[in-house]
Structures are given as C-alpha cells and as structure tokens.
Length: 419
Length: 164
Image (cartoon, each protein chain N blue to C red):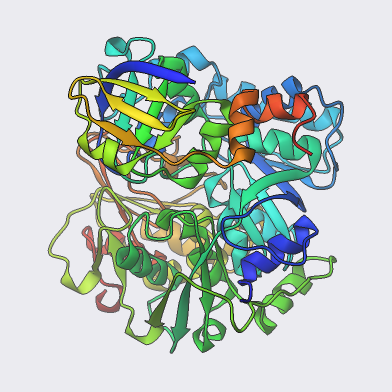
C-alpha cells in the first residue's frame, strides 16, 4: 500500500523509507515558528531544558503579530521577552513592528517555507503552508521550545481524507467559501487527527491565495494539516519568493484514504458560518435579514492582497452603512504598501472604512475592534466561538472578503452578487 | 497513576477560547491564567473547583487555538484529569507535553454525570464511577507517550536524554 503526500514528507524527514498511519516518529524540522503570545511560554520551557543555543538560528522564527503593536503593558513585556531572546540567540528571522506581518501571510511572502518542508508553529493556523506542498502543523509552546532546542518534534503519522476538486469557482466565490463549505460538510471534528489532502483537476483552477485560505482553516475541521499537490503555480510562487530549492512530493497512486469527497467547485456558493462554530454554514442566498454592527476584513485567513482587491472591487465608489464599523487589515507591510500604491486604501477610506497596520488584533478579541454585548460582526477571520471577538454575547459570522464587503454596504449579511 | 475526584461536566466542542479567553493571553503567570479558566461559559469555575476534581467533556475537547495556556490553566486550577469523548489534536499533545493527565473514553464521558465521584487508574486503564459503580475500560497510551507521561512531560524527557 502506498503513502499519502503528507506521509511521504514525514517519512523523508524521519529518515525512513516508509511510514504508516498511527506510527510514532521523530521528525527533523525545517522551521520552528512562534508569535508574541506563544513564544513567551516556549522561552520559559526552553530555559528549563537548559539548552544554551537554538538548533539553527536561521530556522527559528518569531513574529510579533497577535497583540502588536503592543496593546498594553503586559503585551509589551511579552514582546520584549521575545526580542531579548532573539537578540541573545542571534535569531535571523525575528519580525517586529514595522517589519512584521500576520505570521502565516508573512512566512510564504518572505520565502521562509518551500515545497517539501516540515514546519511546526506554536499557532494553530500554521497548517496554512500546506498550500505550498509543505507539511506544516500547529503545536503548543512546549513543542516549540523542544523544537528550538533540538530541531525535532514527535508526531503520530496521520491517515488522510481526500477532497477531489473539479470545476472552477464562480465570480465572487473564493477559497474561503470552499473551506467553509467543506467544514459545513464534515464538521469541526470531521478530519480530527488526520490530513486533508486536496487533489484533482480543480486544484489548478485555484490561485495560490485561495489555496492558502483553504489550508489555513484545515484546523477548523480538526485536521493535522491540509495539503495541496505542487503544480506550476506553486513552483512559480516559491521561485518568486525564495532562493531555496523546492522538493516536490506526490502521493502514491495506491495511497489509502479514510474517505474521499468529490467537490465540484462550480457548485459552491458564497457561504457564511453562523455563531458559534465554523461548521454552522449557510449559503448567502438563503440568509434572511441579519443586521450587523461591524465588518473585519483581514487575518491570516483572508488578509492577502487578493482578498483586499476583492473587497475593494465591491466597495469602490460606495459608502458602507452608517451603523457599520468596517476595519480592513492588510496582513503584511508589503500588502499594505501595494494596497496604498494601487489605490485600494483610498477606496476603503472613501467608503467609510478604517485601514490598520498588520495585526491579528480583533480576530481573537485582542484589540483593534472588540465587540460589545450583543453586537454582530461579519469577519473574514477563522473562528466564531463564544466570546472570540469580544463580549460573550457578541456574535461572529465568518465569510469571504466579498461577502464581508457587500455586508458592510448593506448593513446586514449580503450577497456580493446583488450589491 | 491513580486519580480520585468530583466531576465537573461540559458538552461537545469546548474550545480554547472559552478555556482561556485570548484577552488574558498577555500573561504567562499560571495562577492568573487559572483565575480566568472557563469564565466565559462558567463564571464560577475558579471558585467552585477543588484540587483533584475531574473534568469530563464531550467530543473535540480543546478545539481551536494552539495556546498551551489552555491545559496550563486547567492544570493550575486544580483539575487532576480530563476525560473526554475525543480531544482536538493540539490540545491532546499539549496536555501530554505539559503533564496534564487526559483520557479519551467516549462511554465514560457519556455516562458519568456532573457531581459524581470518579476514580481513574491510568495504569490499569479503568475508570470507575464511584457514585453508580459503573466501570469503563480505556485504551492504554502507546509506550512512547506513556514514557513521556511517566517522565513528567516533554521537557523532563529531554532533560533525561529520553527524547532524541
């Protein structure tokens, strides 16, 4: 029996000819990532281990993105702790305010992940890099600490669920709608402990940014990782952003999957996940009037330039509803600059939105757009749990940038095809 | 390893945002984290928990963020063991890595009720509901993980030269 794409990458990094689902292995890491929330705990554990240096100063990466620019004194102390650690250990890839972006948009952009890599990150959305044909997964701070010290992590080899994609997306429908549709189909634990492997001729019809959004939310179905095969688009993206040589792994023809879902991209409609789970999905055409107070467009899921462009195309020359606050957050400095140069920021401001420096801020209820009791937001973020963006009685509706922009104008959840 | 305690029970998909809301992640102080544990779905949690109490939950416990602050807050609250129908994978490995005892046992998690007294014998793989007398069998951890639990977590395993 053959191996899945994920299993091939893991076997190669464990120095093994082959692995099978359920096997416990020790894997060499190409990158170890943390942010300003998870790294302080990792630094404390790293010091407990008694390690005197990090395993590779070019492979350890820290990004100050969650509560940065520092939201309060405690957040400032946490960033300071990370900064001091990275100075002490001469960590090459330390990204502070001014150079940072939201980590999972920043790492691909900086060329820090290429096809075939194994990456762990003390952030659950580390699974994003599966879009580039890498194995990447979220872990905790202790795994990060041990990864920084030893360059290794333990894994149970996952089985896989295959999503065979056909067709192509309709206008105003994007990667976010695809992944929300899939989570609605299989549930928030539908891929628990397993890989989500995307295959089929439909893959080539998805942009790299759609794929990044899809892989990003694999964790919301409980998956260990969400991975795409490498094609010409992937290789072109990696060549544009990195000097490192990609290593291409492909699933064996006789790889075993626990289940296969056929997904016709042309049938997917704009989709919204209602509170308080990403699996509570409805297509936008079946939603009655749901009045909203806030819109957030950004995050590691949907803060790419393409996402801002989709929102700007809808907001151009329009005004958002007078009772709505719309917050637009480019995911990185490069995206922010491009949005200024190409006039997107002007469109947003003229429509009545605010545009922020990169930060995870409101997505996790940190800062920059917290909700009051009973308020509702449409957000292009990734989670809509109780209290996620603020008060425990506030509500988050997850959607694509197009739906979010259309909803900002309408003042209620709206179909981008009808605004 | 054996645990005995009173059960506090929750439902399915208890996520890390309710275990420890992100607004409190500007600290790594374990006592402060514990004081906010579960507050968004159970505001009296911190005051009513006694050391040794056992948490029982449904499917996909600990889903969401990778924040290790979640198992840290539960452990620092005094909870000795979490029994669930299933665990989200990052929470599962974080709990093992930091030495918070967990057991996956759908039948026990279904039938044990809030307030029951429970005994769990990890070595024998048996959970006993002392209130009803019902016994539930759990699958043992693989030796690699059992060894890490015995060592006291991942950091202790590395310190002992027992990792790589």
